[in-house]
Length: 240
Length: 240
DNA sequence: GTTTGTCTGTCCGCTTCCGTACAGATGACA
DNA sequence: TGTCATCTGTACGGAAGCGGACAGACAAAC
Picture 1: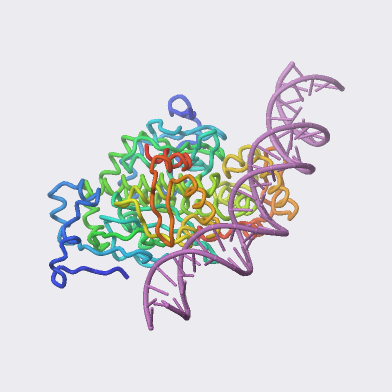
Picture 2: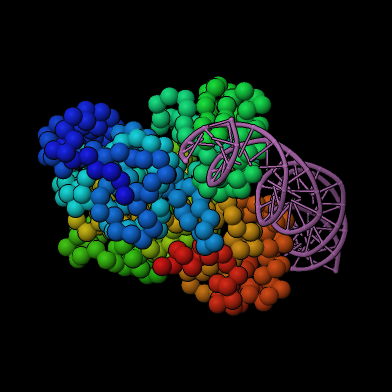
């Protein structure tokens, strides 16, 4: 599902090889621990719109994101989806395996193209069980994500679409290089759990205020500070 | 904040002493591990409406719930609150401490009176670090709660108040003995993140269908199966 | 028994968002 | 250059829930 970059096939791919340290968890792991897992890590590309894992499907690999963004989506009957949380280079896709689960009810979807270090779930479990720094860092990250998801639960209940869109764009921006990203309204609507037309209206609002620009699947952040003002408190709360 | 029952002061309180095994996590811990922590556990009463811990306040004790229900609330500016998840005898209040956090942005509020085994956070951290069964059980529970919170995020976005009320009552019912519980509409409205009047209307709906009865702060479940039908899919999804 | 504070049912106009639909704009590709 | 699939803007009636308000019902306290 995700493209593997095995070193022998593609040994000159410098942009993907050896950037483990672009992931904040891997970067914080002491060298001794890192050396133990280094050989188990393989770079892969995260392609926009690709699914990393499906609901109830066994999680065979975890992904330390080094660039780009992956969404966790809760799916409802009738095919609707709502984003529960986003994972960038600060995190790891597939963390439930270390919590003792083989699968989750969520879909992990690449929402901003990038790269990740892929690792077999079993290997991670072994290292996790040693109880070193990696163990602690992953749990700390789990806690952060938990807080993000809880905030989203509240946000989804009480805030307006335009505010939530602004917040969501900021979450993306924080996890992406550059001010432009590829995103159709249809795609965003599945994240926010609203109609596509609702996204159109909300985006028009932000555009009128010159906070973003928007054309056929490409969003550009024009005024980051202003966007923070347009976002609901949830974004500011989460920053702390 | 919570009433302590120290054995010397209150040695004849049989209903609170020694029911550690009413908590599903403690019950599943092997005897050898349990013996190590037994002396650190002290029974306390969970009183309706009391706060177990406040946002950003240091978590000094954790609570293995043996009876009753505790809510995790996300608070928003302007004083609004929305429930992110509920914890009953299957769980532990204060789990963030083992994830490496000293506090959380959430409030833990007793929503159904009951009892818990209280334990100093530091003692739990020590036992957790040993990496035994308690370690694994707490992480499994964390995963379950994560899933519950993510489901709530989606639910809050798309489902109607009456459906969500039904779901919420079922979550309560699952974690309580008996079919009656003390709950004002004002209280419920803070959990669901809606107006008090909205709860009134939704509850009338359920009452008309003879699923619940309702009078001045006391809700009675009349037809459990019917209530499951009235609840949104989220309840059924979460059961799996 | 009366008072008082709390809890509940209901109402109003208003805002937000939904479901649906359709036309125009854009960019890729032949 | 023209064609075509895709993406976007907008419109409409309707549903749901809001903020605010008020009166009645109830239970506990005096």
